[in-house]
Length: 389
Ligand code: PLP
Image 1 (spheres, rainbow, N blue to C red):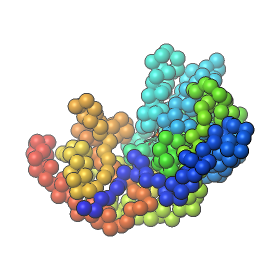
Image 2 (cartoon, helix red, strand yellow; image 1 turned 180 degrees about the vertical axis):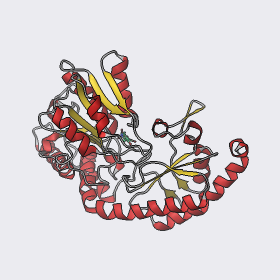
Image 3 (cartoon, rainbow, N blue to C red; image 1 turned 30 degrees about the horizontal axis):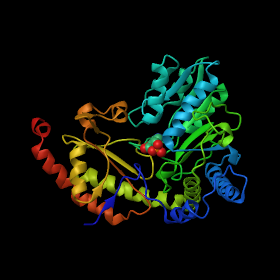
Image 4 (cartoon, rainbow, N blue to C red; image 1 turned 90 degrees about the vertical axis):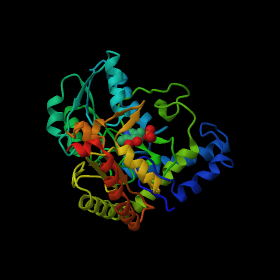
């Protein structure tokens, strides 16, 4: 059976050039970059080249502004907690949005539950957009951080980051963005977009899992979460994951070469899937912004069916997608993102997300268009919700 992978927002397969670049760093070039000898210096040189590639991808002013981490979650935690602990004497107020990834939201709520931080969670409109005016209004004398994601991982909406960044810059407040879904997929300039901190994760753009980075603009103060040997300029102790970092650097280089043509190609597949499904399935709701959205993200809700049932049926046909609803200890929990854009609870359970990548072909869209409508029809025929309408 042909297997079709349409869950690239979940993770991506490593680029063949990434794997080739990483390989020598497991054995021949295994040195610790903190060591003075030639083994160490060889590894240090490779990490330094990777740092330059990541800095270039983000248009950062200097490679030293890149702090390597274990991925998106650690980068988000470091931005939020690191800022809080560095600036708590100045204030304790953090502004975020209702649709952030849990790596940001749960970290903010953790600080709040400890009685440390005060958190304002901004609403979004029905397309998932944060209004920059709301950010402006929420700022107080105690605000130390604004953290708003670049693009949402479920519905693909791209936020007005440059505008929000400009507001923060004007008020002298640190601005962080979780760009885990956009880095390597669309152009980013931390300079032009007024970004002080930015989270990225290698496995979302054809790099290895378990490695990422936090961009920290020169002069932006953060306290480290990991204390120890003082690596990464004291901002993140622990021996560098050299092979992973080399993989991240190569992924950044490949992204610069492929990003533009891939965005064009994936946008076409995304739109033909969305148009085809809308035409074939009644009572289908497209979620996210119609235009300001990730080139690879097609997200929908289908009334009267469970997302998980559709996923299982698609998987039986070799098609891998994802759903916003997660089966947690037996009870289906609706996605906080879908609820925040005003999708009713029962409709949110019927969510599906297809995310394209560099290996997908237009013929795979046709396959989904053949397979999904009959699955929906079959599930609706068994659904008490569909029969009650
Ligand atoms: N932020 C966003 C928007 C994400 O989509 C993800 C992963 O799904 C993360 C953060 C966490 O990244 P990682 O898996 O590298 O910890």
